[in-house]
Length: 158
Image (cartoon, rainbow, N blue to C red):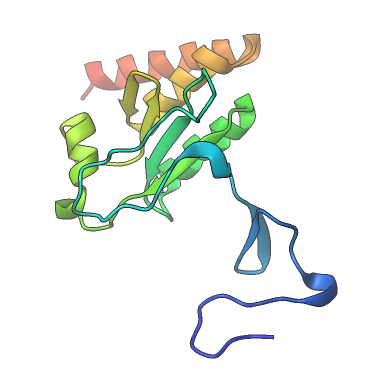
């Protein structure tokens, strides 16, 4: 059944989705943001004020600020899946003039931006290297060093 004028389909019966799953296009996607994460939608013009600790939890959640169809953000999401880390996602506006929360965190307006506790990173290659170095296995540690070498090489020849 499709509701006229809506962008999403309401599915009932044998095609119904399990709780915590939403449909994007033809594929069901499980939400990566747990209900206890404390992430709330914010207006694009406001500074990001998100509680990063879940109630009663000691660890801080990784948060990714991204554009929905950004290929660099997709690389970071894949890396987070590779190292098995849960994370929250905040969609930022496409208009760079409205990315006040990104500018407040990083001093620039580009995405993706990763917040891991007190660490704030931007540039997908640096984020991938950080995640592999911090949460990865031995093979991923080696890949992190290769990425860091590529970054140094690009900076020297730029």
